[in-house]
Structures are given as structure tokens and as C-alpha cells.
Image 1 (tube, one colour):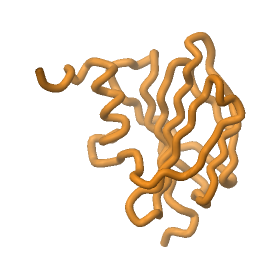
Image 2 (cartoon, rainbow, N blue to C red):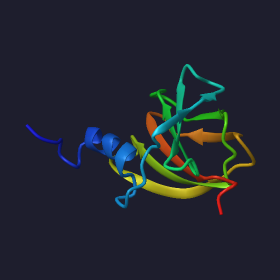
Image 3 (cartoon, rainbow, N blue to C red):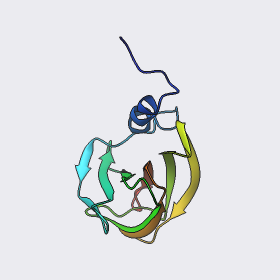
Image 4 (spheres, helix red, strand yellow):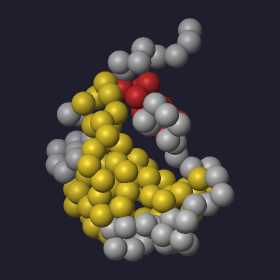
Length: 129
């Protein structure tokens, strides 16, 4: 039958992982450990991209009722101080929204994720040139 319609949330969810910005930003290909302080409601997946100088985090807020503020921890990667943010949420279910960068101080940081959302965070390595 082919691909779903680009306006459907299922198409956008796939795009979030494979081409979030329409220019090739995608979830990495080498998994690394990550976790959240509220793992029952907030799933976190992390991967390094390419040579390992980019970290991608997929954060899924499974709670249908409320935004969640939680601590996220990544093991084995020292992220840069800022991350690009791409989000698919109930506020915009038919498109991925590029949001303002977030700032982090290290491999453990606290952030708020909207209810029923999937967020892709893209960090260059702090050790990248």
C-alpha cells in the first residue's frame, strides 16, 4: 500500500527518527545507555551517530495527562552545552516542530517534556572540534 500520508502522526513519528529536520538529522546508529528519573512515564533512548561525535536522545512522554519534568542521564558521552530540539506532540500531531535549543551542564540534566510527545535531542560532543 505504500507509506502513510505525510500529515499522519505515524508518518511524522518515523520521520522524527530518520529525517527530523528534512535535511538528514536522524537518530543515531550506535546505542548507548540512558535513563530517566521517571522511567514508568518517560522512556529515553540514546545513540551515537557516525563517528560518535553526535549524541541523539529520543525521549517519549507516555503520560496522556501531563507534562513531565524529569532528570535524564546518558552514560559514556560528554555532550556539548546545547542541544537542538525536534518534537512531535499532541499540540502539533501532523508535523515535527523545531524548538529552541536547550542548555545542559553534563551527561545528567533536567528538562520538561510535553504530555504524549516524542522529542529528539541532538547534541554535538563536547570533545568535537
